Structure formats: C-alpha cells, structure tokens
Amino acid sequence: MSKRPLLRRGPSGPLAAKGGLGLIQVGYDQSVTSQTLPAAVTPFSVTVPRNATPDPLQVVLPDVTPGNVLEIDFDLNLLNGGEGAAAFNAMAVVSFKDAPVFPGDFFAINNSQASLQPLAGQEAIWRSLSAVVIPVDAKKATVRVAYDDNDTGGFQIGGTDAFPQSPGSTLKASEIDSLSVPQPGPSALVPVP
Image 1 (cartoon, rainbow, N blue to C red):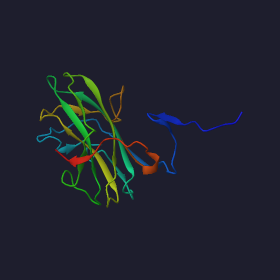
Image 2 (cartoon, rainbow, N blue to C red; image 1 turned 90 degrees about the vertical axis):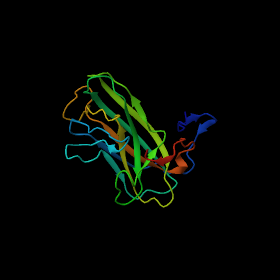
Image 3 (cartoon, one colour; image 1 turned 60 degrees about the horizontal axis):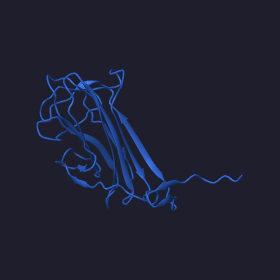
Image 4 (cartoon, rainbow, N blue to C red; image 1 turned 180 degrees about the vertical axis):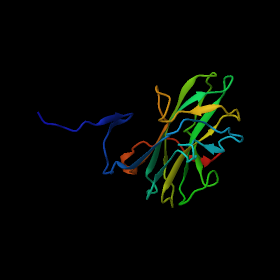
C-alpha cells in the first residue's frame, strides 16, 4: 500500500501547498500577574497588561515579509469584579514600526473584536482568531490586545498566579508564507477606534 500525503479539502477541492514555506515564525505571550485592569476612559485606549509593571501583553515578530499573512489568536480570562453586568470588548492591534507607541502607531484588525457582558462575579473567556496580510514596507510586527470596558473598571485579568480553572490570558502571533494560504481571511487594518 502506497503512502500518500493527506490533503485537507477546501470549498473548491483539495488544498495543496503551492511551494510555500508554511509557518515562518510564531511568538507567544501570557499574562503572569492577576490584577484589576485600568478603566478604559476612551474606547480601546489601553492594552491588556502581562504583569504589574505594567508591561503590555505583546508579541514581536522580527523581519516580517510584506504580502505574507499575520495570524493572531488571543484569549482573555477575565472576572467581572464590578457590581453588575458590564460589557467588555477586546481587539487585536498591530504596529509595523520599529519602536511603536500605542495608540498612534497601531492599527486595529477589524475582524478581531471579541465582546461579552458577564454578570458581577462571573468569569468569562474572550477569544479571537483573525488574520491580515502584512502591508508593504513592514519590517517587524508588534501585536497587542486593546480593550474597552465602557469606563466601568473592575474587570480582573487572571495571570498564571491565580484563576486555577483558566490561568493566564494568552496572545499568539504567527507569520505564514502567502503561498501557503490559498484562502486569506477577510480582515483589514483600520485605525484604532
């Protein structure tokens, strides 16, 4: 019996590699300190921290290639520590500058928004997976997660030091060779709201 490689099927037939290199590089980050998030006075004006310093939860991919695909996956494990139901929205943001400053040097990925409205004391997981084509002249990608809590405050992020059911919040960014992505996603870069 001959062994043939298994091919995944797409909407129009088998998806075979067209000489692409596949995954070029990938980076991960995880929140390590549980803490109450600062209230977002202006929507999406702050990013999720990874520790108490607060350093941002972020992934930096050096030497990205324009035209390749940047795939971003994040999950936020949060607890509504407020007194009532409250809305929380998060979205992936990315900069292609060498030393970016948030928010001015960042773009939002329009299809990356995750939204929930948990009750007081309820834990919830916000999850998003999106991809965008890396623009012309990009040399590196810095990815973070911006949020809007409607200026309510009280949302607590779980770090690896707590929340035993779902410790930490994670961010993953991957660069994928454009020839390995036969059907790119519909996402686009837009100004941070």
